Length: 158
Image (cartoon, rainbow, N blue to C red; front, side, top):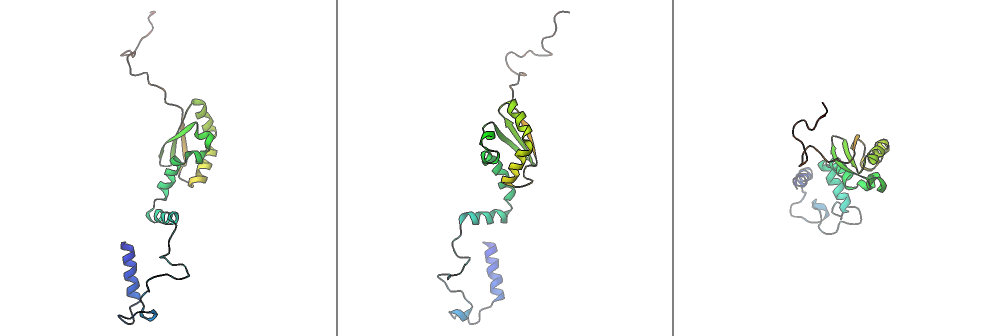
């Protein structure tokens, strides 16, 4: 709103009215009503176009691209690969991916360059620069009812 008001004040300062109180074409005032046959800023706009301009004006393009990696993961990497892995974290261009098995983690490491190209094609270059691929998280045996305190059982034949 502030930007629109400032623009209106600048336009009024550049084009002072010729006849105060007059109406019509010669008065310098814009007629209300229909805009005419040509394009006009008052014409209805498509919502997607307006949203795109807003995102560009506010500098939200990079966060949008990062969110696309997570929101459209199946589209970005393909449905077959998406069934077996999921993105976990994106930090400073490094995407962490968790695979459902160690075999799939190995396969994804082999496909790393192709996946980076697909991601760059969908969301833009330099959004994801590196991928860390992990297998499934194994259960920890460090805690629990069967845990032996101290160094644990050792060789008793001594």
